[in-house]
Length: 282
Image 1: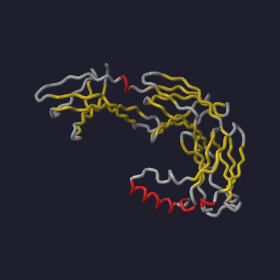
Image 2: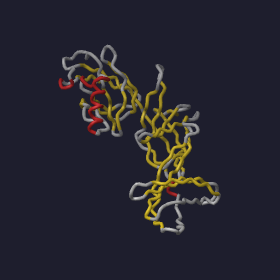
Image 3: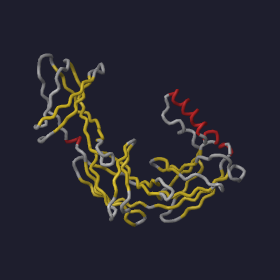
Image 4: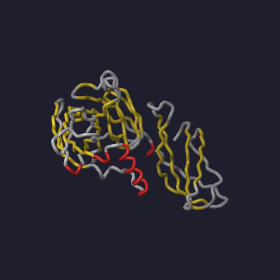
């Protein structure tokens, strides 16, 4: 491996003692000194510059094997860095058959979001860490903010390679009318969401007639609602405090009540009336 290189090296002993080193050399070599003898784990922290975060670089840690050091001796070990190389995606984004031109798309995985703006033909290029990601279209709303439309298939970024993909996303309108167990417009706040195979989708809030109208990607969704006691911020705050005490990450995960499923059609408005079961408290 030739050319200028900066390596961050992290080594860990069985007793969790950790030592870091950063050395830049023209031949891509580095040295870590002052390490006690014994068996050490070695990992490489690789950085890819983030265009959406300006000067910030996103780091990812990779295991790089182990090394056994002997007191008073210098040990040399080669590290194969090909597995930490980023990859490139050249994408064309279509929404309902038309180029998603000059709009923002996001590549997401867990808590990582990397944004790109498509050109006049709906194309973008992304140089990023290898792995499986989700493509999300950010559709601007007239009222401010964005509507997130999720592509149905994941993106595979392959180390050291360029992948060309067309992402054809279709959307429809879900017009949902929600009634309480008596068939009337529910009082108070109602928290309703739609859940796809890869996670929940946010729906617009209900108006005075109990109606929510939201553009969503055309897929099969399961509608869910929170019990009335948890629809308010106060109710959720108490639940989150109790969950933290038990070491739980998602306090609401088991509290959503299933209503029914709905499959949207491209470019169509799907109208649905849902009556909340008595167990919801409405």
